[in-house]
Amino acid sequence: MAAVLRKLIQGRLPALAGVLCRRSGNEGHLFLNSSGSTLMQPRCGYSSPTESVIVEMDKATGVALLKLNIPPVNSLSLPLLTELAIVLDKLEMDKHCRGLILTSAVPNIFSAGLNLFDMMDKPNEHYSEFWRAVQEIWIKLYGSSLANIAAINGSSPAGGCLLALCSDYRIMANNPHFTIGLNETRLGIVAPFWYDILQWRVHHPPPCLHLFVMALVFRLHVHHPSAMTKVTRAYSTELKISVSYVKQPINWRSHEIYK
Ligand SMILES: CCCCCCCCC/C=C/C(=O)SCCNC(=O)CCNC(=O)[C@H](O)C(C)(C)COP(=O)(O)OP(=O)(O)OC[C@H]1O[C@@H](n2cnc3c(N)ncnc32)[C@H](O)[C@@H]1OP(=O)(O)O
Image (cartoon, rainbow, N blue to C red; front, side):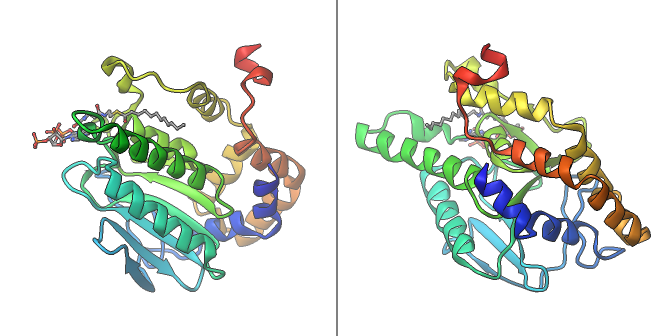
């Protein structure tokens, strides 16, 4: 909670909002179209060594666009998880970076979840390393001090859904062919209890959070800059409560769904 409040105080969420709303047209503006592709003009960029994670940093706003880039399905293999962790660490340490948007460079797929081949026919040491890497990504994204949004521009089953749930907010392309959810139960993989809680929070967001983000997405700021300021001021208390709700420490004993 402290981390989220810190983001709010440091103005990181509004910074991210600025990227979503600042300019009209396609220039510097991120949105998802019906095919799920993201449009944004980067100011400068760098990539992880194997380009499995492409990073486009908008220096003007301090918001980094991260595109997962492992065709055919962005499955979360040990190398991809490791590179993503390195990129997240770099951004966290970059004092110019204020927020990130996680999306995919692979058409129609956000992420197919954990790489199935990393979970079979491997020595025990591999499993330890793999699950440690999974856990690390969850901790880095959920505990990040940067404001982060998942721009889900394709199907996102299982671990792909987990990536999205770790973000502060999710926007998914409106395409009936794109699916999201926990299909891994069919494979006998039991999702941990906190996964449940994350989903519950996503399905029961405080109304104010929606109001705020929707206002941004519909570019209230572009068409009515003063209205956006009014919304932010009028709901400042609710907004703080909403934002602090996004990443509460998870304590299943005290959570509503376990009472
Ligand atoms: C404390 C911390 C604890 C943390 C604990 C956290 C718990 C998290 C639990 C998470 C568990 C998981 O993620 S388990 C993973 C579950 N994921 C899945 O079951 C994904 C299933 N895949 C799909 O639904 C589909 O593939 C989908 C992504 C929609 C794309 O469909 P398409 O028709 O476009 O493509 P396909 O033809 O199916 O797939 C293209 C190729 O990609 C391969 N492929 C697809 N998914 C793959 C995958 N996950 N891993 C590897 N390879 C995959 C296929 O075999 C094909 O390979 P070729 O035939 O060689 O071309």
